[in-house]
Image (cartoon, rainbow, N blue to C red; front, top):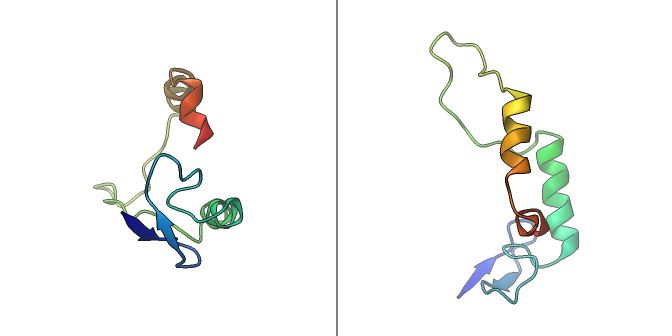
Length: 75
């Protein structure tokens, strides 16, 4: 199966051998990461009932990440 790279629209084979899938290259992967970090990309969410943003418990997130295998952070 092939998909379009979300950054440059180049065709990418969707397979375990595609190291950067769904991106075509490390460059596109890093561009995407930069856009997320700059908050240019966001996932729409349901607003809190009182209209305020949901607060995150940093310690809870860190605990969840600590439980992940090393492979989780490679892709």
